[in-house]
Length: 159
Ligand SMILES: O=c1[nH]c(=O)n([C@H]2C[C@H](O)[C@@H](COP(=O)(O)O)O2)cc1CO
Ligand SMILES: [Zn+2]
Image (cartoon, rainbow, N blue to C red; front, side, top):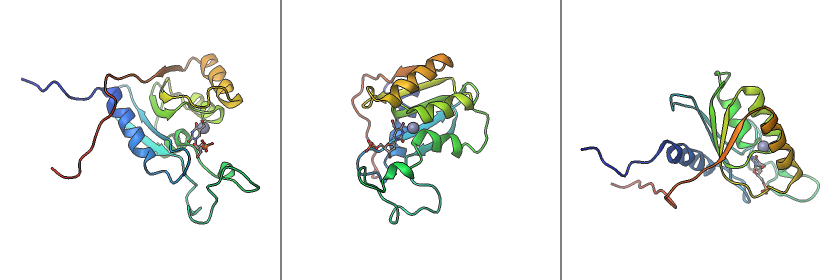
């Protein structure tokens, strides 16, 4: 008889997104994304980080002041889209822990992604998130909050 406590597709892909976020060097907000096709095959992953060649040690991670991370960081969703390296994303699903900003929404829409599954929406009141939701809705991209009866999943490196 098959085991019963296997994880759902949503838990699997949100888990991959969260695992990708663990690569982020951002001290304040770590974001991860995972793009999946209609056959539940992972097409790409990404997390928020600086572009290739721009060292995590040379560029700023601060939020305030003259020179901040906001000028340099590539968002998790855009990184996942770019990491797909031109694969066809039409009809794909994007799992991301933080609700996408307006700039990522533009890339999501233009790449043909059909659905966004997100975990939390801590900047819901920001102009960027309001604009993002407006565009995603106009473009017919479905947005749904992740749900699960589990609070957490754990990974062991020792068996
Ligand atoms: O959609 C997003 N995707 C994404 O990867 N990010 C990244 C950019 C920054 O590195 C970090 C946000 O930083 P902070 O919460 O300190 O403002 O999250 C931020 C957003 C904005 O919602
Ligand atoms: Zn973004």
